[in-house]
Image (tube, rainbow, N blue to C red; front, side):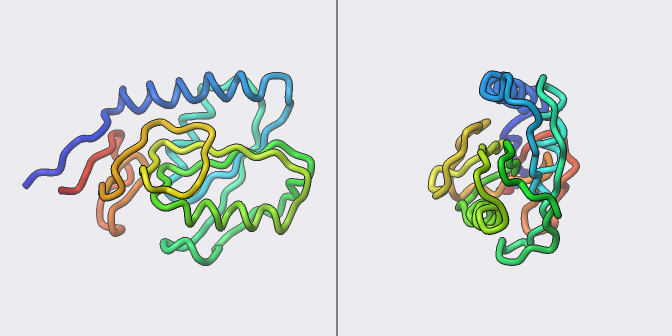
Length: 163
């Protein structure tokens, strides 16, 4: 059985541009925004997103294991008093994002945070400000930075479903 394309490159770009326009409105006049990109899946999404915004950003990267339990890498930045925008390509359960938010709260105070995700599962227990599309919980998506069991191509310009 062949895998199915869920979103084409053009559909993804449309979602990103729409979210970026909203972010431009939300961050208008607020100055520098610190982008935290969750590795590995968030890289293509965050990279494309920042091409379509008009506010200045500094990029930071967070490395976390596949189970979302342990940090492999965390920025040395103190985010206290700063605007923070966190990117992940997909929020399946909300566990990884919760871990990132907990670490941010532990290391910094008095910051503002927003979350951007290309895809969010219906059952995810995490809020997000910018969501490209909500999908069914059981979907095994890959492409555009996402993988399925570390076996499928993150480098695809589209999002597919493993059937």
